[in-house]
Image (cartoon, rainbow, N blue to C red):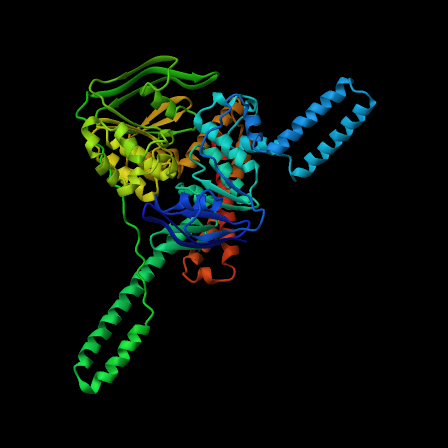
Length: 634
C-alpha cells in the first residue's frame, strides 16, 4: 500500500494543500480532479518528491518507483524515434551496446585464443544480465508503445527533429510507459494525442498492472480509464470508488443531502435557542434552560459543504468592424512529403460569423487554420485576409510556448497592447491571479494555470477575428463554460478547431467538416452534423469515417449479388438482436445503481465491472453493425 498522509503546503501565504490524505492500492487507477488551481499538479510534485510539503508525509515501501511525464522535449534532435525512446533505459542500452561491440570483435577474428575466450565469457555474462533485467522485451515493448501512440513502423528510424512538439511529447510518454513504474503519475497525458491514440491509451491504462493516478479534463477519457475519483476542493478531499460519471451523480446527491441536513439542524438549533431564551426568564424553567444549553453544546454540528465558486471572467476586447470577407481560401493544397492533407479546397469566412472545424484526424483542420494565419507555407492556391482584420490567435500548444523564465505579470505585460499595459494586474485578477501570485514564474505553473495566462494575454490584445486551435485542452469544466460564453458574446468573427463536443454545442451556426481531403459545409452546429452522420459522439464520428476510408482502400468497387446481400442482412439482424439484449442488461444495471443504497451492497464492485464490460461489448457490436451496414449500402 502507498499512503498520502495529511499533506499541507502553502505558497506565498496561500494555502494550496491542506490535510490531504488517502491510500493508494498497488494496481488502482485513480482520477485526481478539481478546479484549476486546486493543487492537483502540486500534489503530484509532492508525491514524486519534487516538492517537500510543509506538513504530512508520503509513505511508500522501500524501492517504490514513481514515474512522471516530463514537460520538456528531447534535447538530442538527431536521435531516431526508437533510439530516443530506448534511451530512458540507460543500463539496458549500455549492455546492448557492449554486446554489439563484443560480437563485432569476435566476428573480426583478430583476437588470440585467450582474448577470444574472455570475449565469449564476457558476452555470455552480458546476455544473461540483459535477459534477467526485465520480464519483457524492452525493445519490442518500445515499438508496441510507439505504434499505440500513433507512430508508423516505417518512422522508427526517423530523426526526432523532423517531428512537431506534440509528436515529440508522445515520445516522452512512450519513454515513461517503457519504465513501468510502480506509481504512474500522468498530468493531462492526452493533450497531444488524437482520438485513436486516446482510445488505445485508455485500454493501456486499464490493463496497466500497477497504480496509476491521472489528471485530465477529458471527461470521456476519465470515464473509460479509471475506477476511483479523488477530488481536491476548498471543502476538503472527496474520495469515491466508481466511474467518473457515477461520482458526479454521487456528489450531487451528497451535496443535496448535506444541504438538507444542515438546513434541518439550523432550524432545530434556532427553535431550541428560542425556547432557552424564553425559559431563562422564568425561575421555574431556568434549570431546564441550562439542560438544553448543555444538549446544544454537545450537538455534533453539520458542516455545510461549500463549493469553490470562484471563476475567471473573460471578455475579449473588440477591435472594430472589418470588411465583409474576413478570410478567403482559393484552391489551396498542402502536402507533407508524400502525405496529401488538403487538395484544392475553397473557403470564405465572413464578418461576425462563428465557424467551427470538425472531422477526421489528419485531414487538415489545424493545417488549414495555420495556412489562413500564414503560419505555414502552402503548395499552391491562395489565402487572402481582408482589410482591417485584427487577429487574436490561441494555438494548440499556446500555453507550452510561454517563456518559463518570466513571471505571470511580466508575461502579460510583454504581450499586452499599449492601451492595456496599465490594466495588466486587473486582467490577471479576472483570471484568478492576484496578490503575490502574479510574481510566480511561469515555469512552476500547472497546465491549467498556463492556459489561463495564455488566455489573459489574448484578452490584453483587441481583435476582430479570434482563432482557437483546441483551446480547452487544459481547462476544467467551469472554465470551459466561461470561455465558451465569452466566445459566443464576442462581437467579431471566430474560427474554432476543437474535439470537445460540449464546447462546440450551439457555438457556431456553421460547421466545416474535413473529410477525404475536402471541406463539407454544414449550416448547423456539431449536434446537427452528428445527427446528419447518424453518430452520437465525436469519437464515433472520427473513427466511423476512418473505417469507411479503410474500406475504400481495401475493397475494390463491386456489387453484392442476392445471396451475398441475404447473408449480410442475416448478420445485421443477429448483431441488432445482440445489441438490443445488451442494452436491456445495461439499463437494468443502471436502474439498480440509481438506488442510493447500491454502493453499500457487497457485490457493487462486480456489478460495476459487469456494466463496464457490457458497455465495451456494446461498442464492439455497434462497430460491427456499422461495418455490415456500410457494406450493404455500398
